[in-house]
Image (cartoon, rainbow, N blue to C red):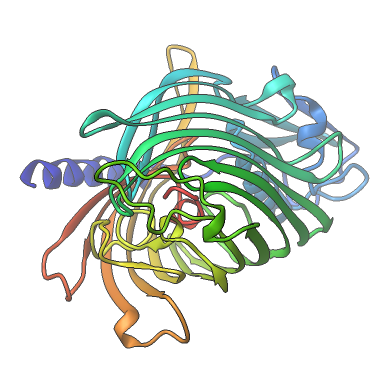
Length: 435
C-alpha cells in the first residue's frame, strides 16, 4: 500500500512539472489564410486517403484553427500518429505527422473482473497495408494460478471497408478457463463480426452476427441490429460530445432440453442448457470540458427477457464494472444497469515521444467518480438491487490500449478500499463478453 502511494505521488510530481512547461505549437497557420493547396509530410506507412477523409479544412477555403483542432482530435483517434501539426507556406497548408510504431511484437495484457490480470504474447500490426486496418494475434494466461486460465485470440478491425464508411470488427476467441464467478469450466469458441455503417455524419446503423460454441452447454448463435448517434469529438479519450446507442439482439435458439452437458462425478448440469432470449441494450454517454477538467456521465442498461442460463448472468464487481467490490458469485443478475459520473483532470496532455526509433505518445490524467450498480432477475429493480461506490485514481494514456488505469474504490456497504488495475476505457470493457 505504501509503495503504491509513493509511486502515484511521484508520477503526480513529474507530470505536474511537465504539464505546464509549454504551450501548444501544433498550429503554424494564421486564421483566415486562403488555402490554395494541401500537402502531407511524414506519411511513410499510411495511405493519403486515410488522412483525406478526416480533414475539415479544404483547398479553396480559408484556414480555420477551430476546424484544425477537430481534425487533430479525429486524426489522433485513428491511433496511428504520435503527433499532428499544421503550417502555412504561402497558400500551401502542410500537415506534418509522426507515425506510431506499426508492428508490436510484445507482451499481451488484459484485465477482467473474472480472471484478473492476464499476460502473454502478442503480434499486432496497427496499420495493415497503410489502410488503417488493425490486426492482432494474442495468447494470454492468468497469473494466479499460472496457466489455469487461457485465451487465444485473433482481432481484425477498421473504420472503413473498400472506401465506404463501413466500420467492421472481427473477433475469433478460444477460451479455456475456470469461471470462478459462475462456478464452471468454460471451454468455448467465439466467432463475432460487428458492423457500423455511417449513413449520416453522426448517425450509424449497427449489425452484429456471432456464434459461440460453449462446451457442456450449447451452440449459441446471435443476430442483432441497432443504431447510434455519435457527436463525440473522438472515440478515444473523449473530451466533448454525446453518444447514444440502442441495440436489439437475439441470442440462442433452444432451451434447457438442448443442453450438450454430460454429467460427471461431482459435476452438475444445472444452469448449463441452451438459451433463447432477446437483449435490449441502451448505451448513453455525455462529456463536457472546461479548461483541463473533463466531466463524463455514462449509463449502460441491458434488459434480457427470455431464457437466460446461469453461465450468462451478469456479474458486477471489478475494474470493468463496479469499483466498490471485487468480483465474486454473490452478486449476479439477468438484467443490469451500470451508471457512472466521472471527473478527469488533464494533468499532462498527450505528448509525443521516441525511444530507440520507436515512436509513441503518453499522457496523465487524475480521475475521481461515482459508480452505480443495479442487478436484478425479473420485474422492476428496487433499492435492494442497488449498490454505489466512489473511486479515484490515475490514468496513463498510451497507444494501442488507450489507457492504463490505477484506481481505488470505496463502498460504504463494504467499508474498506478496493484496489484495481485495468486497461482500456471502462465504457468499452464493460461491453466485453468476458469482462
